[in-house]
Length: 362
Image 1 (cartoon, rainbow, N blue to C red):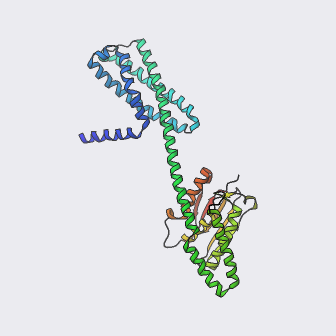
Image 2 (cartoon, rainbow, N blue to C red; image 1 turned 120 degrees about the vertical axis):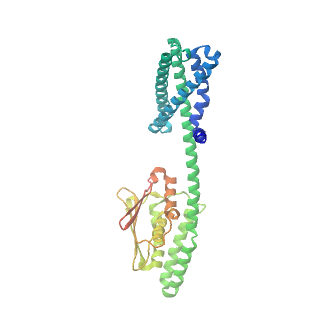
Image 3 (tube, rainbow, N blue to C red; image 1 turned 135 degrees about the vertical axis):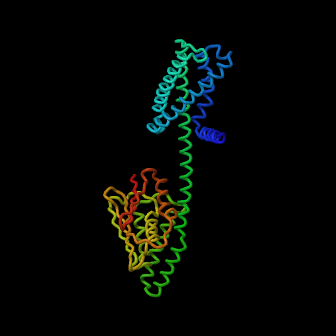
């Protein structure tokens, strides 16, 4: 039984350590509120009579903790209704009003109850009751201010944590881009295809080398130290991806078919570089690519100015975990670059896998 009690108190104090608002109120408000209220209720005898001081303080402390717990619940509800930084005035006003109503209501009920039972000789006096009400109004105002202070601090800490996470995702994203840029498997496959073409079709080999140079020229331009921006236009990305598609179609022949349908109206839309390559590689990584089961990928713009990439589903027996795929990195990258406007939608319906991503227009 004793262990259960200690475990309860340990849990309570652990919660208190994590809740800064509760900590501030319990340390800065209640220690002086309890004796002042006790003095207003019993007068000078409150400090001269040890029994009244200890007993009255204990009862008032319990009542203050109950009122504080109710205020904590209200604080959470108000923060959900007015969560934004610019709504601090609304939060403070509502916290003060509701804290005052709750605290004064509890005070009146307690005074009436004390008067009925004559607790420690208590007798209700109008002047002292009025001063007690003013005292709780002041405490409610201080509590509202401390609540806003704690809420603002928690918002700042949350923003700092999100910023740190975004920086970490940025580093992972840049690492993923570098890995794509110098992917040894892609280079090996290209060189292997080229060696076959040189002997079988020199003209095609020349075309292959030309497209391969365009691919690596683009990779260097979007990842090199002289890059102008972290975004590219859809038009630039499509010019690059056509060269990349040529290399894939030369390698897989009839095993892959990629079509592009992009309206001229949306070619100036901004997007993260190498987005289309990531989506195409993701489809190849997770699906069978063969002449008997060709992989079909459609790249097209929608009527609402978004970009849609669809591939047929014919999953490999051995699949790469989703969390390690380039698609997961791409989702984090868009969220970091464009915030809420960069949400990527993923749909898997029947035999099709669809990725819908935004184009940013400036």
